[in-house]
Image 1 (cartoon, one colour):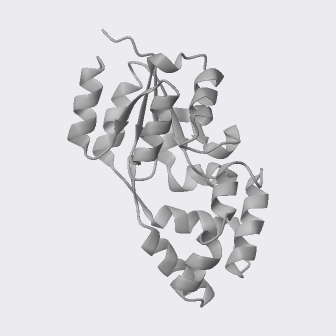
Image 2: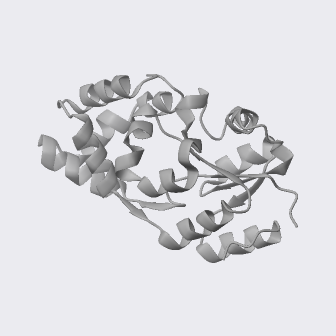
Length: 206
């Protein structure tokens, strides 16, 4: 028996491998710019964090900003395919979450902008299979992890008490933000550790 009614999961480095160097190589091949130039132009400033907070507030706006920073007229299909190629599903973890979804309410919360939200069917179809409409990017809440507010907002959206909510992420600062909001949080390091955590919380992940 468990007292928890809701479980929220991060995406990159929890449910999927996340290989930024693969993305940089693909963008270098596409644009002819060096990986160092691309990284500095796109990720070296405040734009990524602002996009994760909903600025811009649409997939179209995010794509236009990305193309401007990249200095290349990238289209949505190319962007989404590059994002897909840099990810690898962690099938054992996804299976645990799939099993958990049979026992409690679950949602996804990833620090990303609205462009990634639009691209989920291409780059993370497993997420939509498991979480459905509860597959969220932080931009939808106008805040990003580790801000405690983003955790409170996702709990409020689905009517769950933060004190009865679990959260799983691979970053310590995000775990601390979730705990400040009242959630019970697990710092992901391995499938075995996640399984142990879920069992201690009263679930049967396998």
